[in-house]
Image (tube, rainbow, N blue to C red; front, side, top):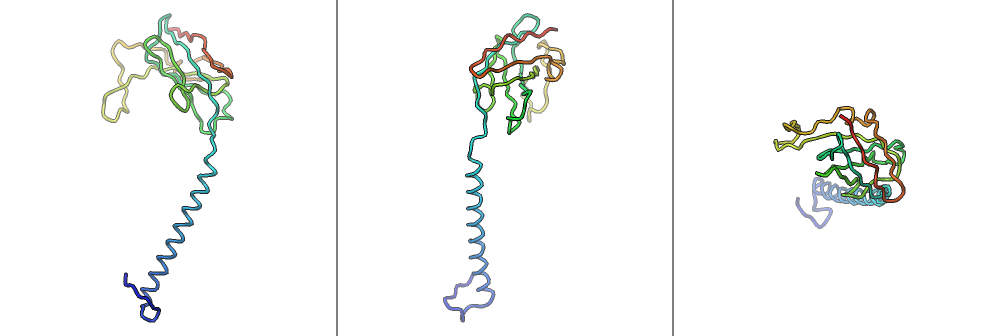
Length: 168
């Protein structure tokens, strides 16, 4: 872009470029300011308060290791992000629920729970699940929270859930 210090010495194209550049800077500054105001308005925390939740899952009277639990709130009106608290059972069948961060628990309320055995894979993309030979297989009804028959209540304070016993 050519620079000219006086209006008389500038071509129309040069003057237009200078005006367009100035206009672009003003537009960009306005956009940045508007974005900042939007983000400031969104800065409030919309996460619900959580309480620690722990428990144990058994299958056929034995600890169920490697299960994934997904908690579906019966009343979802306070779940702004459609959060689904989750947990994974350890070798002894114990679990600790997380909603927003590791082991933070779940908001108080009633939940229908789905439990499934999901074996991790080492395949590229990890979007395919393989059944591990000899792995525990639980009935499919437990995987769907609407058919599992498992309902738990998370109290307003730290909650140790009763043992969840699954039948073959």
